[in-house]
Length: 325
Length: 207
Image (cartoon, rainbow over all chains, first blue to last red; front, side, top):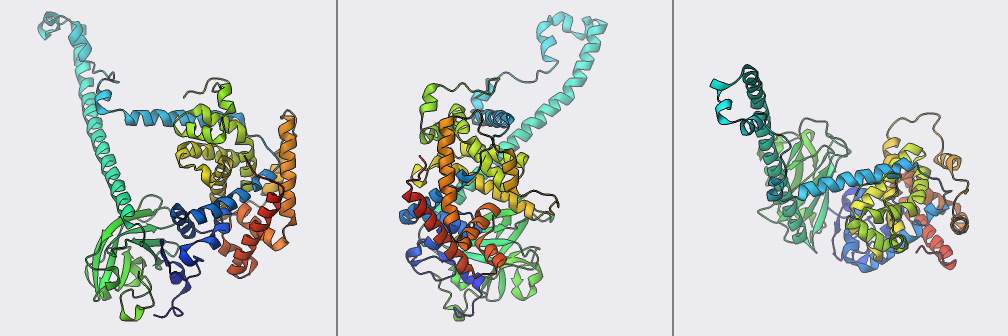
C-alpha cells in the first residue's frame, strides 16, 4: 500500500518512540520532536493519543520538555484573569477528612502480618469469656445452674454462625490478599515489559470495528518486534456481559489467538503478548468481541471485530511503504 | 492527620514561610499541614478557575477538592523543572473541569443554564476582608494578563478560548469553525507565542 493511498487515520496513528523518521499529520518533527503538539497540549486541546505521545517524548527529550514548560507557564497565567471567589469552608474540612481516611487506610494496608497478629481482636467469641472466668467444676454441665445452662446454649448457638463468619471472612481476606498480590505481580510484569521496550519501541493504533465505533486500541511493540502489549479503551462503561476480549493475529489466512484482554468497569484493559515471529510476518491483528474459533480467518467476519486491521495488511509484500522499524 | 475543630491544622510560622516546592515535597511525604498551607494560598484561585470553567458552584467545589486531593496523592510526581506548583495545580484543575464539561456536553442541557462567566461574576468576592497588598498585586496581574489576551488577534484568541474554556480539541475547533486543522494549530501556536512575549516583556512570572 502506498503512502498516499493509506487512510489518514492510519498514518496519523503511526509514530516512533525516539525514532528519527516519521512523517504523518501527527506533527512529529525531525528527531521525533513534538513542537507542533506542545501548544495544544498546554491548552488541553489534544486527544488522548496525542497527549500520550507528548508525555512519552518529554520524558527523555529535555528540549521539548523545556518548550512545554514554557507554554504551560504562559497558559498557567490565564486563570489569574478570573475574578476571585471563595469556596465554602466545608470543602477544606471535607478534603482533610478524606486525606485522613486515606492515610489510615494506607497505614492499615502497610502493617506487616506479624504486627496485625499482635493487635487486639475486634470480635471475641461469647464462649471464650465464661470458660476462662468460671471454675471448671461449676462450668461442667452437670453442675450448671439453669440460667447458666440457657446462656451456654445461646452462646453456643451464637458462636457457631460467628465462627463460620470469622472463618469465611478469614478465607475471603486471604483470597483478597492473594488477588492483590497477583495484580501487583501483573503490574510489575507490565512495567518490566514496558521498560524493556525502551527506544525503538513502536506504537500502532487499531481501527474500531462497527461493533464499537468509539473504541480505541493501541499496540506497543518492543524493538525486538516480538514482545508487545495491547491496550484497548472502549470509551464507555462496560455494558456488555463480556469483560474480556481475545486478540488474534492472522498468518497465512489463519486466525491465531495471542492473548486475552480483560476490560475493567471503565472499559479499559491491557495485556502483554509474545509473538513467535516478527510482527511484520503477520497479515493483520484483530481484537474479537465474540469468541472465535481458531483456524481459517475467512470464518471471521467484521461483525465480531471490535478493533483491528493495522494498515490493512501489515505483512504483505505490497506494504513496503508501511515502514516497520 | 486529624483536622482539629475550627478547621485549622495548626500551621506553624515555619510552614507558612516555606516555598510551594518545599510544601508540596512535605505533602508528598504525607504531611497534611503542608498541604493545608498550599490550600490556604491557592484554594481561591483554583475555585474561581473551576467555577469559570464549569459554571456551577457545587461542581466547582468538587473539582477544587479533587484537585487538592490529587496534588497530595501525586505530589512526588511534581517537578519544579517543569514549572511552578500553581501551574501544575491549575493544570490538574483544568483537566478535571474539562472532563466534567465533556461529560456534560454529552448530556442534554437545561435551557436556563447560565454562562460560566456570569456565574463566576455573580459570586465573585468584593474584596472586603482580603489582604490589601494581595488584592492590589492580584488586580494588577489580572489587568496585565487580560490586557495581553485582549491584544491577540480575534481568531487566535478564539482558538485559545475554545480549547481552554470549553475543552474542545484542535480537531473539534477546526470542525466548529470550519477551518483546516493546520490553521487552528497555527493560531494556537502564534497566540501563545504572542501571549508569552506580551507577558514576558512585563516581567510576568509566577514565583
